[in-house]
Length: 148
Image (cartoon, rainbow, N blue to C red; front, side):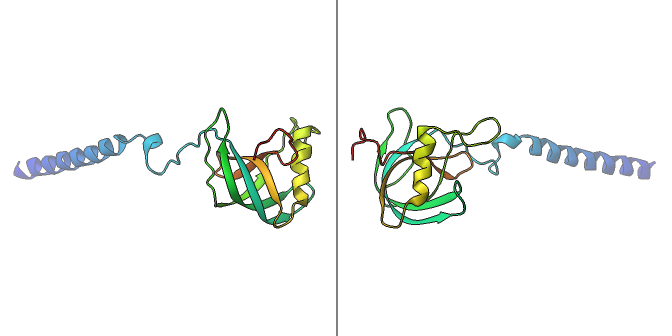
């Protein structure tokens, strides 16, 4: 009889400790754990930047490395760019449902950037994407209404 009580006690003790571990693991929902990356808010920065380098892979795939000379906020969105920092920028082309680049003024301005050379000074609208990549939204270099 003593052995039976001892065995039951051990089983109860084991199950109660396992249950506490399961409950404590459920106390922190997975979407609040520290391994989940923070969301990036919509942002847009107007920058004046000098080209450090331009890596052109093909007619629409290129990466501009720039150093910001000045930064200003957009009227409607927060600014995340910092003066004096270097950024690797890729163009954010407008595309159709098939993924083809649309022919419009914004895309034409972005396409001109593939010819940018080191030491060129550009005026751009850039943003940090949800994938944590810096993108060029618009080439403002030829826009007569842009203030330095």
